[in-house]
Amino acid sequence: MTKELNFAQDLIDFIGKSPSAFHVVENVKEELVYNGFTELNFSERWNIKKEGKYFVTKNDSALIAFVVGKGDIEKEGFKLIGAHTDSPTFKIKPNPEIIEENTYLRLNTEVYGGPILNTWFDRPLSLAGRITIKGKDLFSPKTYLINIDEPLMIIPNLAIHMNRKVNEGIKLNTQKETLPLLSIVNEEFEKENFLANKIGRKLDVEVEDILDFDLFLYEYEKGKIMGLNNEFISCGKLDDLAMVHAGIKGLINSKVNRKTNVMILFDNEEVGSQTKQGAASPMLRTVLERICLSLGGDREDFYRSLSNSFLISADMAHGVHPNYVEKQDPTNRPVINGGPAIKLSANQAYTTDSISSTVYESICKVAGVPVQKFVNRSDERGGSTIGPISSTQLDIPSVDIGNPILSMHSVRELGGVDDHYYLYKSFIEYYNY
Image (tube, rainbow, N blue to C red; front, side, top):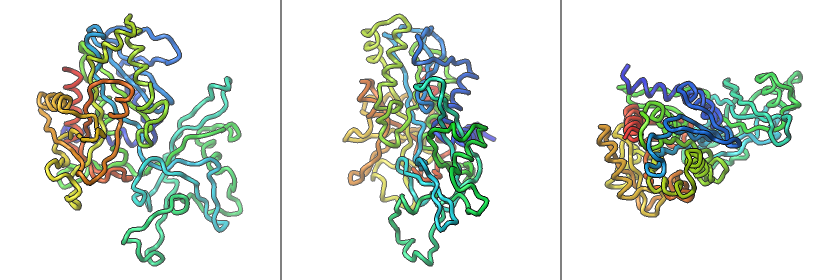
């Protein structure tokens, strides 16, 4: 197996064991600790040293890891890569059990982000996230991560005989038609607190101790490498766990340089980033300032460090779709396995300008990585990402980039094996330069 295929399979394995943003952070933490990184706590005084490796987490769903450079931080600044841990899905509501016809048990859900809804139908789904129980301190509840890791439920389609126009396109009612089916209820079935009982048995905790939860659906089937020449990655959550995977690997495997290397994993990008762990929060700014202060600098040194810094905002890009070629811009048409795409927008939906674009393109040239450009059609509105949102908190030069994929926000997206390795090579070169 080639190094590209090995790296793609490692991505699939990482996504397979990361069914929620909480699990993403937990798995990244384990890898960082294994590679000599030390965990810091926001509530404690930091005592960091040059060439040290550290990370800190927020809400169990966001993480910032960094390797302190050899140079003076106010003169050298930071090299940052930002990605996000969340993906479009369905979140479980409180009191979720619904029994229909005194027979069918369903779960009440609400949509998280912007999934392609019909791709979630007729496939095995499972449940993962975080549960919370009362702790010794009322302001510090105890949390557990949970992954049911079973084909637990399904969202069944209505038969075409009862919906003759289904192939002409229909509007789905997300309160009625996207609720997952769990079981058939009989006389011996636990008709109340099904979910709490299932969680209690899985974690070996008392049901009455479970006070709340953050639980999400995910596709149970794992991703695959596919295609005539094994050129494609078919997998959920490529947006944006491919960037998380490549960025963390790049940080771990790069050498200590004069600048301080930073990898940021924000949460809640899919719902606007307006949370304490999102890109619109002061989380990143706080961490960068505390790094400066811990190294003996002051607030003036912090602002000086920002002026010498650079951010790569890493999120996925839209590749040319072979069945919808007219949807792409006429002259900027990134394809799968053609290399990462630099994303540009006249209305500043992306942070890229000619200077930051040149910086990243030059990095890729040194790394031997091909580069493409992505611009939306002028009559189409594109999506958002963490780059412009981060710029509201930190005035750092930034470029938005991403690997071209198809089926973005589907339960299963399609990317390129070569692209993922290209991306990793560009991140290594960036951190090493």
